[in-house]
Amino acid sequence: MPVQFAPTFSSQSLNELERQFLTDLELSPQPKAPIQHPEATESAVDAPAASKISRRIGAVAGVALAVATGTVAKVTADGTPTYEGEFQLSIDPITLDNKSDNLLVAQALRKNVSEPEELASALPNASAGRVKLLTSPRLLDPVVETLRAEDPTIDYTQLRNKLHITLEANNQVNIRYQDNDPEKVKQVLEKLFQRYQTYSQEECHDDACRAIEFIEVQIPQVQAQIKALQADIQALHGQHNIKNLPSDSSQFSIRVSEISKQKTDIEVRLADAQAQYALLKDQLALKPDDQTVALILNQDSAYQALLLQLIRMEKQMAAELGKLTPNQDQLQALFAQYQTVRTQIHQETIQVLQRHLDDPNADLQNPILQDNYSLALLQQSIKAAHNVQVLAIRRQTLAEVDELLTHNNKDLAALLRRDAELRQELQTALGILQQYQDELKRLQTESPKRTVPLQVLSAPELLMDKSGAPVPIAHNQTHDLVVGAAVGVVLGAGAAALTNKEEDTLKRKMDRRLSRYGRKPMPPRKMAQKIRTSRLSARSRADKLKM
Image 1 (cartoon, rainbow, N blue to C red):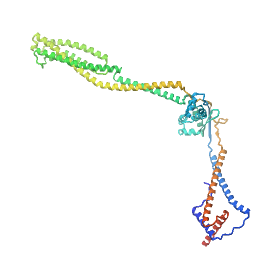
Image 2 (tube, rainbow, N blue to C red; image 1 turned 45 degrees about the vertical axis):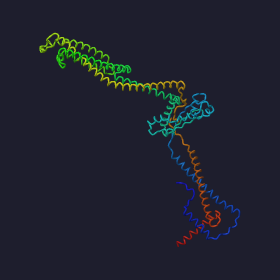
Image 3 (cartoon, rainbow, N blue to C red; image 1 turned 180 degrees about the vertical axis):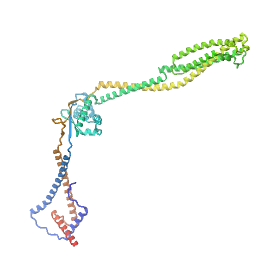
Image 4 (cartoon, helix red, strand yellow; image 1 turned 90 degrees about the vertical axis):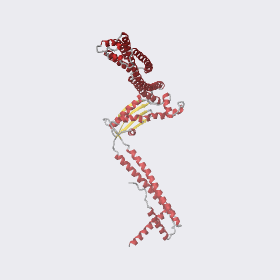
């Protein structure tokens, strides 16, 4: 219920009252002013002032009583017990004798260390800053995270509002925590105690030490990146069976050039062999398209078996030579087998003609088989035909090798690009690692690890009685009532001032209205009497009208 400080009038009722009052003034004869004694005049003058003072006192007392009553009700209703626990720490004072402390103070002031006067004036602020650090999110957030396992609703603000940390003159820090649950008070104090100990003993607290922390975190990450890049390079080389990329790529280029030369050479040799074969056929009086010699070779099963074996080994060597890094051991084994088969097939070409002559199904009526000269030319033609077949097989092998090398050359270009990229990343990472290691060594030498020197004076403990039961802290009800009364007095004085202002405003307005009719303002006492008379007259006229 709000306190009504002064009577209020609507603008309509106020104007009606003034109009009626002025009408009565005009109709009534003006009496002569009676002669009054000084005592009566003084009493008439002091009456309005006394009335005004009494109204002010009433307003002040009323509002003060209302506020005090509300305060008592609040104190009475707030009966939930609050428990408190505490522990003490000692923080070493910051002095200008310590170079690291000078740096800390200078950083707080953003000043140069060479300004001792300003640094000395900042020592109290720097010490207070250390205490404020104990309530910073950096220190309290880990505590909040651990407490949320039991109370998911807790946050930094809630913890901070219930935490009270004060710095005494002897650099003793008192840490107090209040809550309605004594077990929670004990739990929170233990977590805070552990956090402050960890912070004091293990963590860095200046720019240089934070830089060391950053580098110590980054070095393992860079080392892991280096290992990953090295593994990628090894996997890339292993995928293409490369042991030494510069050497293998150089050997590959040499092999490409060698195959190209062999292709040119084989074309020349094949052309010579074909020319010789054609000449021998001409000496035998055989037509160019005569297939007698080829037929003798094709019908010899032993020769054909060795020829197929030779072709198979040529293909195997072609596949191996076309790789980026051929298996040298396998190539040597294939080449040895190739030489053996080639020797065997060369010997078979000598026996092919004799086996043909011994074959009962052979056509011995052919003129080239009738005399020794023709048989000698035929033997040379068989050898020449064999040579043409072997050279043709070699030309096909070189063509396959060249095709494989052309394809793998593109892969080698992509491999070299990827290898160069990985090696560039690896070199960059190695350079960063070296920089980190050099900077870490410098920081550890020039700026050794510093910590905030906190010493434990007392362990966390909950306020308890002699029996060991938690004791709630008492509310200072007297203090609350005194404060409530003081607030009530202030509000009451304001209400009285507002009431006085409204009365003065009404009086000035009435005086201005009277002056319009050429009349002087009445004294307050006479004005009040006139107002009562006009009200009685108005009531009398109204009663007559009703009758």
